[in-house]
Image 1 (cartoon, rainbow, N blue to C red):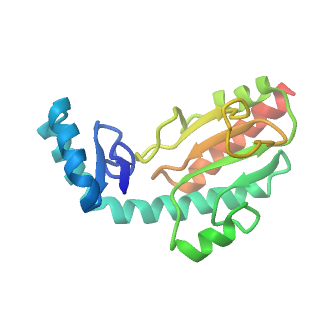
Image 2 (cartoon, helix red, strand yellow):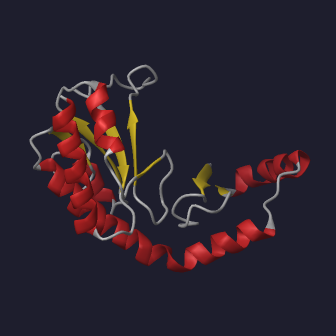
Length: 193
């Protein structure tokens, strides 16, 4: 009945907009419209402009995020420090068959599961990255990394990663530069063990 999108991510594409969208079917639209009106919700004109600006380049940006993300994910899958790479385009990823059936691409957002190592070593890995910012958002031009542990909040299925997990967003930087940055992170990880 409803589709809710965060316009702050790939729609905006520059990490500079506060925007969300809601689409509704005809049966739900009237009630949604009333709630929005009575709540006084509205988006500022600057955010609308930035969203429209982002939509113009969203296709080429998403294609680049996908290509770069897949290249980095494939490289990470070969690393001895990594237990799993959770990227839907990789055959080793749970849900790959569904992704292949239903999608024509992916974004630059995926997770890596380290082989068992102290969390402090993972923090050293992230701290050594120069090109990756630290943050939970994604969809912008810059690459991001953030550690996460969803074992306490997972409700649908049990999360058993096997080791610490880091979520990566691969931005629009040069892929070889990003891989070089990740190599620095792995050197810091090894030194912190």
